[in-house]
Length: 306
Length: 287
Image (tube, rainbow over all chains, first blue to last red; front, side, top):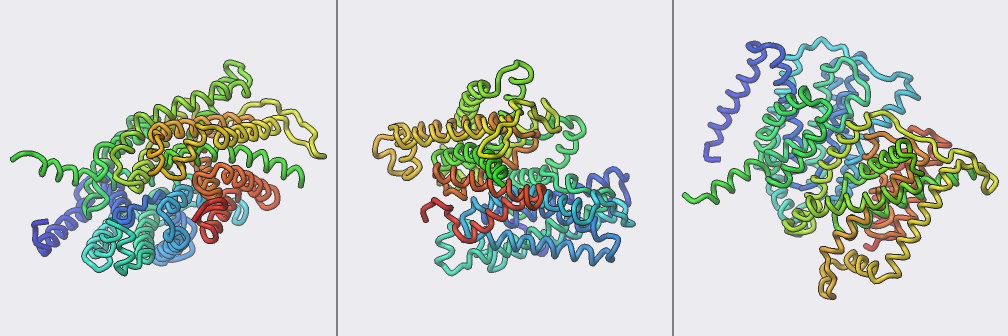
């Protein structure tokens, strides 16, 4: 970054204002696209906040996303909306604490395994609960929101996510994280409380992901576990963060925008072959630019003769 | 009661069989394969097609499905894993890369199966006649499945602990850095181990398809259970995988019978969670 921080902030504020005004100027269809894109930018940034520096690949994005959406579906008729969001965030936080406490003390692979099946576990448990305890399968969300209202909420959350991510990068925690990512043993010997920092990051990141799910819930109107716990969400988040580069603040954003547009087009043009194309693309990214497109550009620049 | 024990052992036997494959892949080839369960499901569908279209007995079909799994995984290792192994600076980096790549592979295999067979539940009827055993009645196909799992398990343990080839594989699992000093080709051992693991997954899939319904999207659950069995038994430990597999099968069957079939995965996770808190290195693992 060569730009001064104050200038960068002004620029970011201007872009944010422009994005916020967009739904008043463009057709509803494009507001929908912007909405989805903002959702994924937030998901990918929140995912990278934890998984980037720690290198703990979290495969549980949709577990938290789904919990957020489903909480809104359950509570939207009984509580005022802000309280519903608060509840959703709280539940996501508690779930992240439980997962984090039991796995983050151990080697990374236990965490991966645990998060790998977490979405399926939550989906099955919620289905079981609904069928056997509450006798309802599928719920309706009736909230007086149009696409742009949801979009504005997501945009605010996205801005907050970037602020948090930026703040962490500049704080003591950020420094500790850099040490941790380079060498965990050395970091621990230098007095970094490794487990606590990982846990803190995981909880922040998961809470944001839960909120993305909660805010987007009114878009579906009808919600059941198999809709909101769709594993493709975890996969797309991961691939976006990876394409842009999970180690950089703007990396997930750079990855999310083109991939979201590509996926929109693919899911309309090749609905049956969507996951095959997605999988192949993902393997290609891991092979060609494991550090992300931003790092790739940097090495190409450095490597090329002047 | 006894019926549940037998059913639990049948289920556990297949878990043990597939988990042996995963523990060999992870313990020797050092590759965390998240598309493992999708290999199992692909083998289920292959056996189903061989049986219903070509009228080949599922037990004989294993002779086709198993070697196909071997070749398929050999190719995956050669063309996808080998470049990653070559470029990884350390074991941690390889682990992250292999997790990511096999996660992508999972979606590819699942996508292909969905295109070919759709998303519905599939099953076929094979040896579905009741057999009396130990004072209880079991379906014939389950009994066959149990016998097959135990046979394959016993053969594998025999090969690993009684032959030179098995000793080489175990040497690489125990000390990957020192093994080359004794003239062991670790690359070759890793390749073979990955392929053998795939063959076991395919064979396990064939066995599972004889008595269970399956869907194109069920791979994740199989991978999950196999992973838990591997961790439960201790990474790279074949006897551990057998004991842990049988244990998991029993737990699952008893939860399904006495509590609720919808909670089996929750039970599996609870076992995993308790284990992580009490013995993170597994029942047979070394600290």
